[in-house]
Image (cartoon, rainbow, N blue to C red; front, side, top):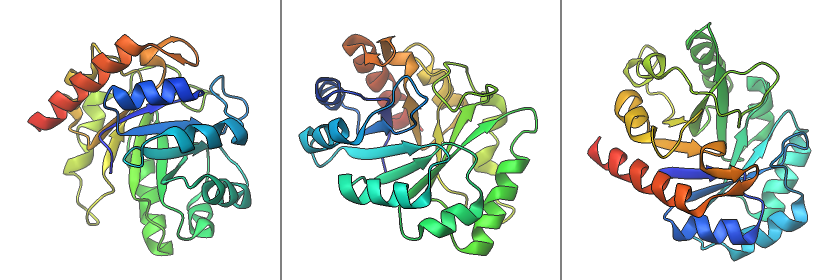
Length: 222
């Protein structure tokens, strides 16, 4: 498990800077339409350069299951983040691959998320972690839009069908608002991309350090 993840890393320099700032997870984006897209070759160099204590997460959007499995094994990724429209059956197809399922919550609220998790339980493929992002039509994450903190604050309280996967909060987080977001939502971890960038996909060292410090302090208080 991680506490603070910086997503959309595209260079060894940024990866090492993020690790030095205290982030305990990095996200490598394998979605070709993203401005933070990373090809497998530079991803290999990034993974090799990072300390073993840093969780390496690969982000995929509606990719073929064989491609996801192959990339995870080739790079030795600790976690696969599914950020598209993948159905529960897709998670079952991935088998033992460690998964974090991302959802972009809209006006329908959390009920579609709970229904999805019910199907996963029936199939025996409940994800290890659940990431909640803001919903922006046609955009699979990294939009900079803030998620509905009031709604997400109810997630940990729902125990209708047993324990839920730990919540990772994303969506519009910045060094300035992450502490308040953590206080209101009470997630297990936080995830940021655009909120610590000077310009996509380049990470700003001062913003990264400020974000990690604020997030860790707020999470310690929970």
